[in-house]
Image (tube, rainbow, N blue to C red; front, top):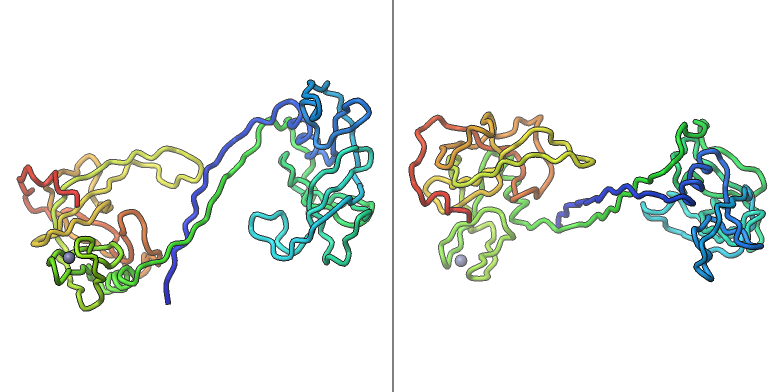
Length: 328
Ligand SMILES: [Zn+2]
């Protein structure tokens, strides 16, 4: 059975809301829904410009709802994690009382049989409101608003910005050779694969010889030495972006394994301050204790399993100017 590894990449943004939406979002924290007058019409959510003519609108806000009438709807039988509710619900155009335009939002009706055009609905507010459209958790059938959980009340300050995390989760298959390499690392072995045609030895990768384009199965596996020499390294200074867990500069080193042509790339170093790492330094493998085992596959440079890094052996450095050119 193929193993998979899930990865998520998130780009966190803060966006400024502008004069209309910041008033609208601030009102949501007070359990109020605002529209804006545009002639005889009331637009919800408020807009900065007349959608028909592009004329700038005065900041003439009107409180609407909180109840309203479903104009049209569609049922979502299998919500994803990006949907507002974690169980089946309806997306509906809801014309709030006093508004001219419909608001698109979720209705928690339980079943599509409970939905109909003309259905009266009212807000279910979140208890903890931060000035986002999902402060309105959803709408529910009936005339009465409700609050989900303890009502924390409005915020002290007007809402001027909104956090927005653009997130993608993707899934990659783990090659069988990588699964075997991780299993071997549990036994504190560093597995390589040796091509029977070109006799090159590889570590990591997808289980193919890139020169001869042949698959390298378990019969080609060899044990690699646990000592080597640093040929290159980078010192990474962590940037404090949201979600960053590293706070101190750290090293990723390239290690040429003894008596082989195998370079393990982007390896962590252990008990070796960043300021003391040198090209030519002799290092040996450091293995995780059972409590430190990492079940994850993959990672930068294919470092995985029980091999957690490399520490100095204390031997004299290798003095070879060509070492620095050994990156693959
Ligand atoms: Zn080959």
